[in-house]
Length: 235
Length: 272
Image 1: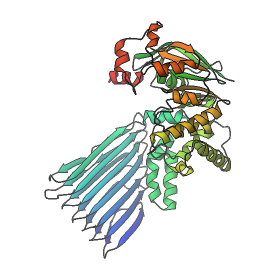
Image 2: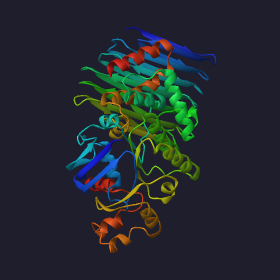
Image 3: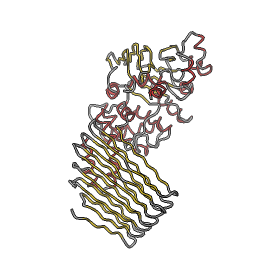
Image 4: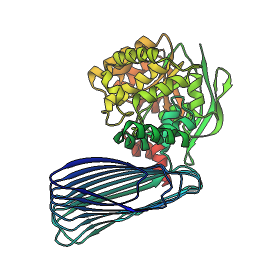
């Protein structure tokens, strides 16, 4: 697949929704912002996303992957100038024997740059979800803040999940945080819902919906409907 | 009227026995107050009646209207008309309160409720427990204060309309006004359903009708009496039980389990 190039310049604030997209190369110039909504329902095996962020720019990514196929995503966001800010929110649902790998990295090249990553996954049947990637604060990037949260719910006995994002910090004066959880559905939540008469299946579906559905609200109505249908089908 | 019958109930949590042969009949026209020092099995009894899988029945039976429910899942017990207002209601992220309430209500009906009927029921319940209706659109207990969570339990009771209501320290975390509100709702509901209420404070019991009082010590019923027992415990604590010949398991248990803990939690901790 060819690479799509996106450039935001001249103080623009852009918003873009892409469905079943190809490789992406993104430049967000000084004082510009981009809200990028990505939904993958298709058969892309490999996706590469590269972004370069200028001074006081902001880059919000909402990435919903509800494809029924193998996929490897490599993303690198370069926070090249002071004041650059990236928020990344990914939700993925896997089933069958699909293998999904998301390698999501953020490089803080200079000081006072900010990155927040939230990756959520639900791994079903015999599928596997892997979250990796590096949040790297380079030497001299003082006052930068970086955070990574990764959470995978492993739904079925043969499903697998690995969350191993890495922090690399080469500067002292920074804030960095890191959280990774892989586990079954919360037993207390299940009991709570079941004690109100919901069957095991209904309780599982409601909790999963609550876990994956919030991302759908970011998309256009048509895409929202498609995401909700796929979640409901899967449950 | 329905009857919950508990026969020689033994319950263990992670291999530690907490209930040690408890027998009790509760009929759904009555309100029963369940007292006892911390760590003697009150919450365990309630959780076991509701069917929490962390609590293993090692011996004995629980019957509801002569049906053996000992090994039923929690949802089946709920459908039979048993409800547990939890001591620590879970915050369930992303699960919308209205969606949840509707699913709960529909689980207890043959046909799904119409939208109009549902909003009528919902509005009435919110009004009764003094929770602003706007909060219905929030996620289930997420970011609720302690008092809001407890009121949300009472709200669920009103919507689900059970036969037997188990309330585990429903008054903890409530301010004075909220206790009044909750007590008022319970009082109004006492004619319609049975209650088994655990509380450490006479304040709640004073505001409602209590038909019978049971004191649980060491996983068994130590005293079975009337409302006057509440006053006695409120002013004198539980030490007098020793003079009456009630055996406490051991001093270590009495001392190590302090206020705000429970026997099941201690067992879980020890198992780790």
